[in-house]
View 1 (spheres, rainbow, N blue to C red):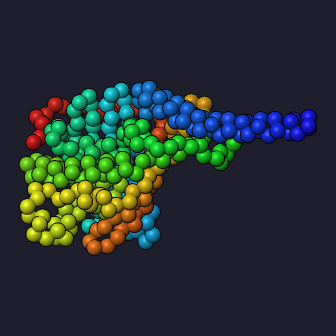
View 2: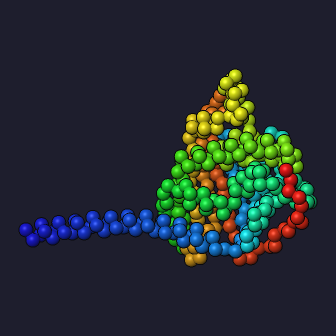
View 3: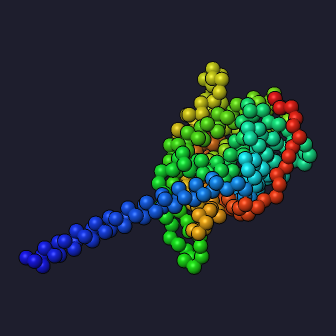
Length: 301
């Protein structure tokens, strides 16, 4: 009887310990994310660079976007290189966010131009590749956080993975598509900025062709609509995404963010399966070169 009682108590104790261990793992992953995010948000200056790759098999455009930039205080500077493989060219866009003002210049332009608040396309492009926005997105959309196995116990780098909520991702994509539609009208009145921002979750839709495609499929009924039915387009999509944060376990600062995106949607009467990856590397915390200081110019548009 005594042995049976002892065995029963040991079983209960082991079960409790296993449960505590599992709870501890979850808590550690969430706690690590909070610490990395908070530590990153306190940094006054750093540099970053990265690229967006299409991983879909036989993709003709493996590197769609290359970007680099730096933050100093409240200001963020970014240079974005956008590949246009069909025309065998690369478009360059420079962005500078200072306080509540956004400046931009395209190609080899020397002069910065102030961007009107209604021109959301350029703000959208800045958000696409900004590590600051990446953490905001994780905060708003994270579904779960888990610790990844330590690939090299001898270094100071550890990793966590944040899975994003698919429904919230689709809502964000719908917002981007509506903003793209609004930007088309803004482009007509603001010829200085003809930029079309990338749709990060569905790259093949970035050129805006989805608006024309939808109009053709809808037939005469589309004539009564001022804008394409974005909800109808997004509802038939499947979107999944997660972030992997690599961070220094001593400083708790991120060294690399990798966003993996898988989306499935209709385009030109075909079902598109897209897999893309956005890699962002962070460096030079506390020491960056001075940012540009554009002269104040009248707001365009």
